[in-house]
Amino acid sequence: MSDAHRKAKTPEQTRRALLDRAAALALHQGIAAITLPAVAEAAGVTKGAVFHHFGSKQGLTEALCADLIARIDAEVDTALAEDPGGHGCFTRAYVRCTFAPQGAASPWSALSLSALTDPALARIWADWMTARLARHAATDQGIALEIVRLAADGYWLAALQGHAPEDRDGIRARLLAATPADRSAP
Image (cartoon, rainbow, N blue to C red; front, side, top):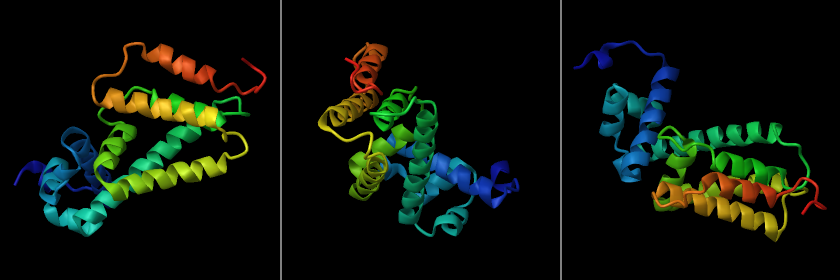
């Protein structure tokens, strides 16, 4: 047994390590790579620790999705707090978060890849988006804003697949320009 298995960890540290390693496995190898032994090994804990925290692979996968959604929700809330408000505020926040640097630790990347292959995770993502749009119904309804969000999703997917257009900043700027806080703006 390695030293990692002997180091005392708090339950919160162990749970966080398991979720982080599961997200990394999903991002780099796909959702099928999330096996209890693989996650335990990557986190430096026993398989029993995974069972203790999540009960099963499905429990781990659902907890991972809930954790990623919570992290995405927090990113969007931060972007909303920095936005001037008004027409399109959620859409602008969504675009800013979608175009943020996409590293291996990005919850956006891990969730999107997982949701592409798992219908249950896709449903959780769709439910989050539906709830956020309902919360921002007064500012973010309409086909023009929906097109902007779909374009951001398309860019995100292309970036994850390694074939995004090179003018990332220009695309982001054009999408943001299509969501003026003042509806009378061009």
